Every structure is written in C-alpha cells, then in structure tokens.
Image 1 (cartoon, rainbow, N blue to C red):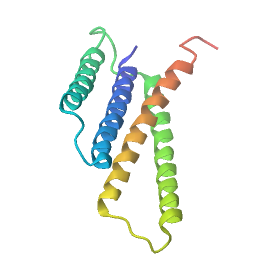
Image 2: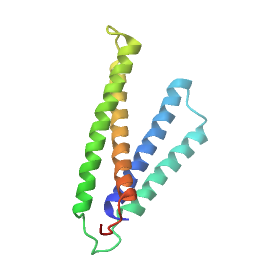
Image 3: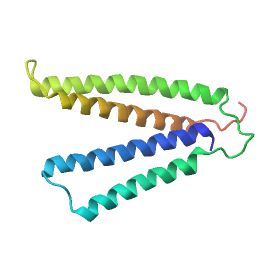
Image 4: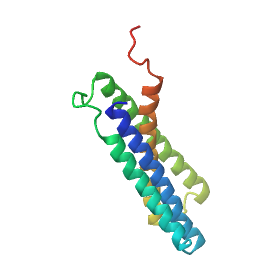
Length: 146
C-alpha cells in the first residue's frame, strides 16, 4: 500500500468518524437531552481512539526508499479530484433543488442550516475523493504491461 492509498484510508475513516459524530450530536438535538453519561463518553473515546490509531498506523512510510509519488499517483490524484469536484457540485445542486421544492421559492431557512449543508457537502466530497482513489488503485491494472 503506497502513501496515496494510506491517505485515502485516513480520509475515509475521518469522513465516517465525522458522520458518526454528526449523528451523535444530531441525536442530542432531536432527543432534546444528552444520552446516558457512560454511553456518550464510551462512544467518543472509541471513535477518536480508532481515528488516532488509524492515522498512526497508516501515515508512516514503509521504507525510506519509498518515493513520495510517481506519475501514476499524480494521474490518480487528478482523476479523483475531478470526480469529487463534479460530485460536490452535483450534490450542491441536489440540495438546492430539494430546498427549493420543500420550502418553495419564498421560503427561508436559518443560517445554521447553511453551515450544516456546507459541512455535509465537504464531508461527502472528501469521502468521494477517498473512494475514487481507492477504486482506481483497486481496479487498476496493477502495473503489468499491455
């Protein structure tokens, strides 16, 4: 596994951790109260410990001779960035369409909802970028000659 794949796995775990954290915080607002005390502390500790262990396990190089990136890595970065860019604009378009259809043309939304939308689109963009990188490495030709 090269450095690009490691970073993609870290992005993927971070996006999943962000979604779990958002669901936990969202449940606090929906329920109107904090979950039972030990439960919240255990969930927070396990989630952040998992992310920290993942970062430490995947971030280091396998060897000193391992290059930072080669041409194939750079091509995969460009393709993944293009895919996530298009995906983020499509997602923003869908969100605006859904808001327009549900609230109408003269409806209003609170400002904090815009922040949540922006944060959600950023998380989905990061997730799409990571998945695009991992798919390109997984479905590539593994370096054999044509």
